[in-house]
Amino acid sequence: MEVILADYLGFCYGVKRAIKIARENASEDGTSCTLGPIIHNPQMVERLKAEGVGTVDRLEELPEGTIIIRSHGVGPEVYQEAEERGLKVVDATCPHVKKAQLSAKELVDEGYNVVIIGEKQHPEVKSIFEWSGRKARVLETEAEAKELDSCAKLGIVCQTTFSGAKFRQIAMHLLEKSRDVRILRTICTATDQRQAAAIDLAQQVDLMLVIGGKNSANTTRLAQLCNEYCLTYHIETAAELRDEWFDKIEKIGITAGASTPDWIIKEVYKKCQNRA
Ligand code: F3S
Image (spheres, rainbow, N blue to C red):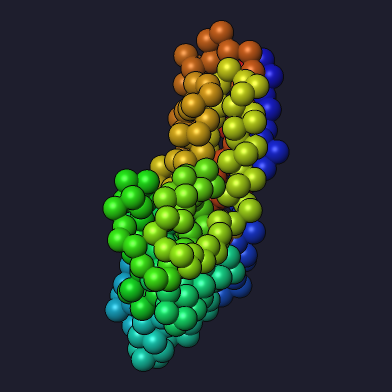
């Protein structure tokens, strides 16, 4: 049995950067916390907690200390509220997300009706929406794009981790909605690279293992894409591997979401190799 790793997998630049920033601001007395889990990976969140970086869901849960903004980013009002509460703000927003946030704001300031193409419930999309002054429309499907009213000026930004192919399909409908359409393709290359490498590998193997948090949008998307080409399992850790999955399997492909730590990928890889 052959085990092949995707050419691009695991932590992206923005996640590595956010974790580094969080570690640099760890404190032993529990007063250093991220606002929401730093990444959508429960194992990494636990590890950071042990190193002195906790998690709060709301600013009021941290009476004093340092609040770390995670890579998904937050709206401008959160920075203001944290300062009013006397908290030190450490901003680990991924620069690509920052670009999408500021692009939405700029488009609104220039008089564009702004559309965010992305998942409505994703924290990053919510943060971009806040930066648009809550004026943007969030569209997730082609059907929603078709229903959009025409307008004089239409500006489009995208969730950084959205599927490139789906973005193009939705944007095609939006091109018909205005004579002045400005598209800022704010999808980051890490997502495109991981998706392309996963699809490429899924076409060469009998089974794909996609590793990452079940609550991670980009990992779930990788699993959906791989599933179109071969048998695919989405797992969080090596403990979920089942013997029966490997019956009659000759080639296994492994990929992992942008929020999956290296040590978990290595564990899965080793366990698969031991069967080979
Ligand atoms: Fe940033 Fe792209 Fe990662 S937006 S957090 S580098 S997936």
